[in-house]
Image (cartoon, rainbow, N blue to C red):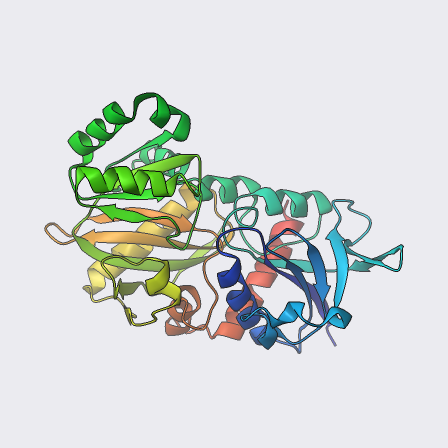
Length: 360
């Protein structure tokens, strides 16, 4: 009999996407094959406390996991490669617990931006998902766009600037943006996900408001032309060899696929496969694999595109290295449509983590 491996799921975090992480983690914990893995849980509260949690995963989404102190133990994850990773701090003592792999289900800042991945790499414990460089690269939309440009990957016209630059010369920057990108313009914080802080500006005054909103979430913003086209996503998994899913299409219930449309309203329309020709679907899959390689991804990522209406051009939108794993999230749904059920998908991702660690 193959020995059961211990997998530590880390969830929560101090980012603006804390609540989404709780929902994703609950789904992951419930669907990891229990005949192959023993699952432990480590939550990070909104104020940055690390707590080992021994309760049921269905208490995560609404925050009830924090209500019963008997189920919570202060803990840390050690970078010491001998300790085995998880250390419980109970009754004035430190008790190490060896874990075989970590599944970080952390969206946004301090979760998928390379900081957590750096800690895990120091520990030597295998972990699901992209390494430090790819995580940091994909999280910063300005840097990711620049790397995509360097690899001749077609994408929407864009530009970026910092809050410091904006305070020094706001009018010139905004006028240049309108001249280069036209209106409307999408404005995004450079380092958030789930469309947090994203706005669509249709006028010069709305552009000012959108930029100032984005600066509430990051010190750098990215401005992109508004593409008239379909929003198409493709899930990718693999290390050196990759597998791209059947692409899916999102028809937002709002003007664009914002946070509310993704996680609250729940009335956006999803089509899997996307309503494209077989040839165009294959092109999206090939482009997703190309982007995945160019940005040094490993394990998993969801690659988002626009398919422009007037000429069918496939334009890169962004890459998410820890996409949503909720019951309505596109990443698992696209692989399910590709013949890989959710539990099998999680198993494959954990096995890819072991393989990457062996080859590092």
